[in-house]
Image (spheres, rainbow, N blue to C red):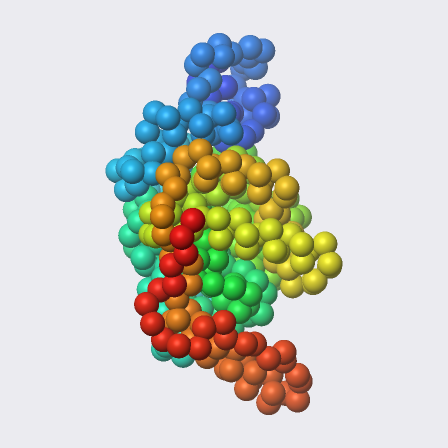
Length: 346
């Protein structure tokens, strides 16, 4: 549209809404000679999902949990092909791994990868995922464009059961499935902002990457929009549900993080400062579960394998810290015996 003599006001408004950019700012960036004052409301329905929009689209199939994998949740204005997205993610992943200490224990890495891949198979993601564990005590996980996914050891130790871990992982998988990162980068390119792909990752991802590479940039560049986070919450709980986990565990995990944040526990405040689970967000998540995810008699809450891997990781961290002469709290297993996944009736 740049350089044209005229522009369709509806298209400009639609693009503005989809990108979350004020229409005047978009028109100026695109050098458009018009700045429409009003756009027909009935033609604004293609905007990025609002809470009302999510509900409507769930009724009409886009967010129908029974159609996972056969719906185009990543649709929208995006300059990045899947191939270009994958190449971008690979480049960023190389930087992350160069600056991070990775967990190489095969029992831990195989388990986390298997939990993640099960979620990916029950998602809308169109790219294969590479899932690794970072030796970092911050309670965090982040997925780069193209499916390069990192789980911090701190998140595994903070989770009280496998369903909590799966809930956080599913949320990050949802950001990739909905292509939020490349849409953010597309937005930045339209506005001719600094072309630094790392700064446009949102939530804990943005914070983690910024810390790893030492980017001294305003935190506002590290957030996904509220609508994108809302969509990732919704999709992530659907993926968690479709894999057999109780999506309420995602809510419980973040409620616990929120309570800990109030107590000013630095690791929680630091990791989730760009990714807050507000009271309103908790309420929306609970409403989503009640309205759109049919209740089941049983869900997977925990497994003996999760408890075993968590204890193994805790011991690994204990040996590492002990070598430095520091103390580490002792973690107790909740389930001492091996067996099938623990199911809870609702």
